[in-house]
Image (cartoon, rainbow, N blue to C red; front, top):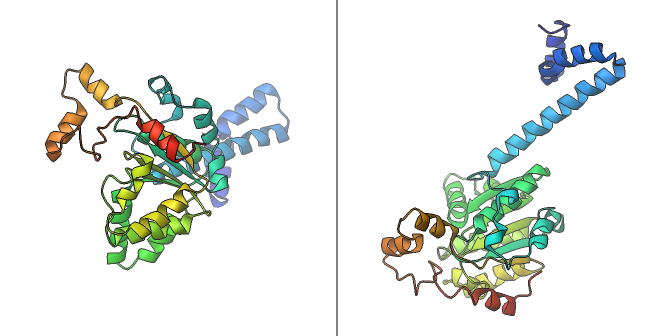
Length: 289
């Protein structure tokens, strides 16, 4: 029982019912430690602030649509010795969100692009930023669905104003009309107004291939994305492939090739090419920050 039952309806009326969770324990603590009233009140207020912060964080995490609890603490840097850890940890401070610039992450399948993007998203959510994770396909499908029911403008403005939008698997499927126009319009609206993270299996110089139907729209979109962007290349073997090999199962890229009738040695969509030279190519075309 709470020490002062008549407080319950009053606290609920003031929308401070969370205090009830710690009121009895804090009252006991105040008596045992002979705390002054202001000290007792301070404990209750700090409890309520912490409760509300945790509730807001939980809500941001749910809305972010993270697929799993991928954090920077769980990222295996040892698999990618060429990756600048200091630069990644600097990104985790989320200054790039305040700068309203993009983070572009490229590399072959299974090297940790999605993990790294989600880890930066987790860091942003913990620091109070609203975040949304979506694949390129899901993002554009949501705009098409909104257009079908007359809520396109509302959905577009929601996506345009998010402090951090994470777009996974950019270029995995080619962008054709009207998706290429929608994608361009969204990036243009977010340009210098909000931060965006993109991941892609394509080498940076090949990102234009994502816009086969309209090279001009592609160039305009990529120009905005690249301006002031932090560019990261993950150059290594597939983590998923290594895990499957350890379980004596078929390598992931071979499975993907079979399912799509593509040769893993020649298909850029499966990204089975000489990734040893990938980082050299990317750095030659775009100076990494």
